[in-house]
View 1 (cartoon, rainbow, N blue to C red):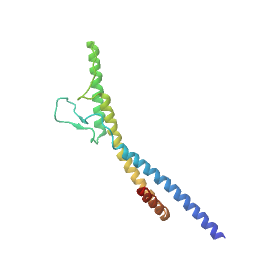
View 2 (tube, rainbow, N blue to C red):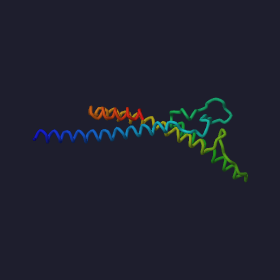
View 3 (spheres, rainbow, N blue to C red):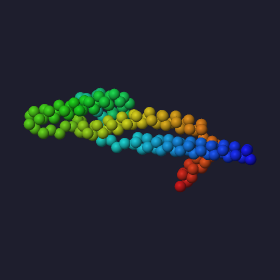
View 4 (cartoon, helix red, strand yellow):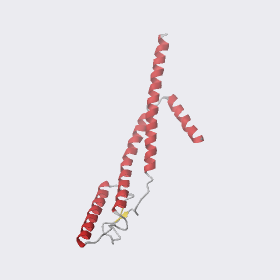
Length: 157
């Protein structure tokens, strides 16, 4: 009788353990899917930025930039340039809609924000991959088999 009680308790603990691991594993998968979706953005600009409007060299493709500091420099440049243009237009008593390389500051800002998010997502993806590896080490053979069956079932739907 004592063996059955101990075995039941162990089985209950394993089931609770497996349930917790499964919940965490599902959460990791949900976050990975959200990251994959965020990596396919809609861009507002051409993505090619230059600090000198008529220059054909020294372009920065913000869609592939990896240095967030450079993206901050671009936004600071645009904000300063827009502020100066608006002030100059006010001084002359005219209205002026600012754009840089054919796009508004708002469009550039949206694209810069998108790229910064993509850069941050790369770090999150690595973190989730590490968590997934750690969780995989905790999965019982029974839970692993059940999860594999679920995955196959999803593919067959």
